[in-house]
Image (cartoon, rainbow, N blue to C red; front, side):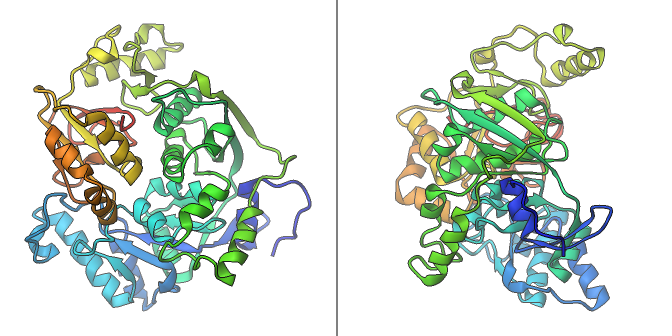
Length: 463
């Protein structure tokens, strides 16, 4: 075991050091993993590897599985089983295989008939499976979402999924420490999605490469847990391994009464909170990279190109690639304009969209539903919109929204009110764009073809 260090530590340093099982001279770490989220896309080969080697799952009690990426979000009222409900062959095979594997290995599973089913990065926090100070992995890059709780959470590949299932450990390396400090106040109408898009626009998609970002400052402290999750969710889009926010009373309040969290008021809860309160970066802790942002400089932000760093204010215009600093950026900019079907100088507010998508692991929680509903209440979807879709992040989010009458607000406005799933965030299920269709999306990636071949995506907040 590595010797304890007396130097000031960051939040990342503290959580990492508590989970190091072994450290080699070359810096390779064997890290203990507290929580493992599993879904249908990156797990089939991992489970097959376990079966071929005659191994079991090391900690079934620390593993939680659900289907989310490939599932249709149409009504499930008449669904008999996954095999007959999912039409696409590969998607059906992956979902059926996960159901078989969770039975074979005795894992907790939230399937399509379970109200707790949903996107892995939504159900983990709402169940209290995500806790401060833990290490957490999933075969999905946006596992960084859970860092909002002060968890060290990051995505892994399928071979690593197998390794964690078999050993509850992971081979990794130390990351650099990066701090993004956002101080001041946000103007009305500016959301956490605008904060993170602004930050990515500032540092670029490679700005956090090799680092774990700690988000801090008065603006971050003022945010709800769901807003913090949106920010940490997109840490990966800034190139980072993970994103983290130190836990505080907002965190503890959110966790009270969650099914898988320590029981509120118990000795276990009190001990946990006492430990969680210590998960703050030391005052003199050193960061390899520091970024400071003034909250008043952040405005409602939208992407124009095919990378999350291609951002402009909603009141701005499509930039001219000929003004970019390097020839490579100019070439890339010209390609993006062609792919997106845009002309430099066009005001963003004048760009017409074909579809609207409110959902994804970035913005599909109850606060997102409420915020968007306040905007659309009493209004109607514009006549040029082919489809407007709202997809709650979990069955429980859907249930709560319906209890609050939010579903009816959307339906009255002309939106489709869907079942839980990843939906139009990615082209792996029936909810996709047709070539050259343009979408206003609350998701996290606007790459070429991300929402369907030839689809054009503009990232933005739910409001």
